[in-house]
Image (cartoon, rainbow, N blue to C red):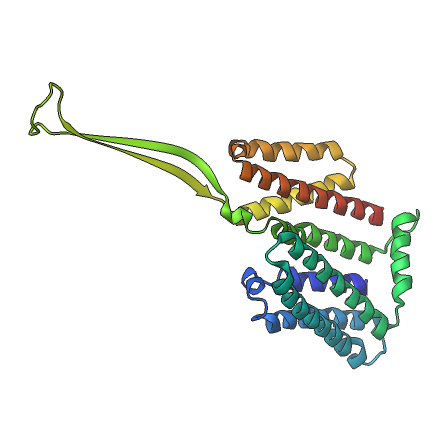
Length: 290
């Protein structure tokens, strides 16, 4: 339970307490970000120390582990910021791999902290987790099941959304939805013009307007959250055909915009990635809890 609780604290600090502005200016807001991690980790460790009735000194059971996790998080983030600026060259796939590697390193540091300060063997804990996946009749405790469910919810919403946003890059902000084309014609006839011909003389002006609508990104984010949660739920119960109805509903709602090739490719990439993540998380939830 301690391991899952620390993962939840990490995800909350990284994806809920860290605003978009903090992400854009991460080096400037790094101290505030690390403070969030330290406070949440301290709260989790303190609650665990109090509820378990452990007789370890508070300094060893709470303060040092929290400082270790927050300190290693600071080092990893600083290295990541430098490497992203130097090596990604604004390529989305490079940023995506740096993001995945960054999260894996944070996860490993949490596991190392548990081993160093609580004496829980790293290898045996990992092997126990694998056994839960592949051996029948082995289940998590009720508390651990609830915590694991919360982890899946966070991964299926904010974390997956952040991953998809990195993959798509700045494309959603560049795409505008074509709403229509309007043409206005203004004709002005003047009787004072010299009549060189039999027809009336005058001026004629024509104006054409292309109307676009910029996407509401907050609304799209909410749709993505609900979509992945539904996919996780349907996958958990093995209702794979029902997932096709979600894709169909999205396609019908965006049918008018499919004429734009850029928009169609963006829609397809985002939808397939979202479905893939939802199905993977749903399978993981089913295999661990059942």
